[in-house]
Image 1 (tube, rainbow, N blue to C red):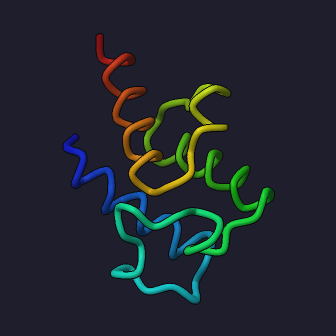
Image 2: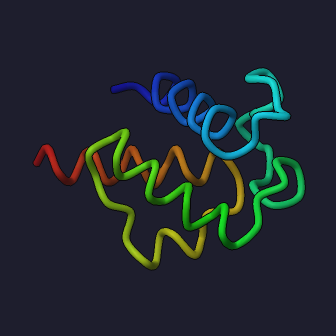
Image 3: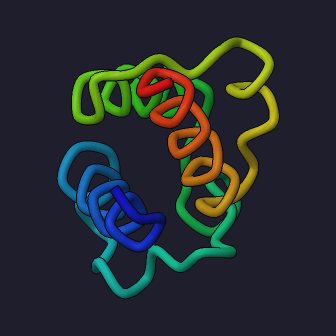
Amino acid sequence: MTTDQIHDKLARIIVEKLNSALELDEVGWDSTLREDLGMDSLGAAELLFEIEEAFGTEIGAVDATSLVTVRDAVTAISRSLQSRAA
């Protein structure tokens, strides 16, 4: 799965499951999860759950605390998928 595909799938998750007030095109690579997308700590926990369900992978605790932007989340997902495939 390419990073663009991960981004697109993640953007859909954010809009459909966490913030239906957003449009897909508002979920940019450098959008911050808290400030730009309005995610609170409960939303962050829900996002991790949705990521694990949608991508069939786990984001480690260290990666989870470093997720500030959508790009950070895409990178963490990509890294997790690669390590799972290895």
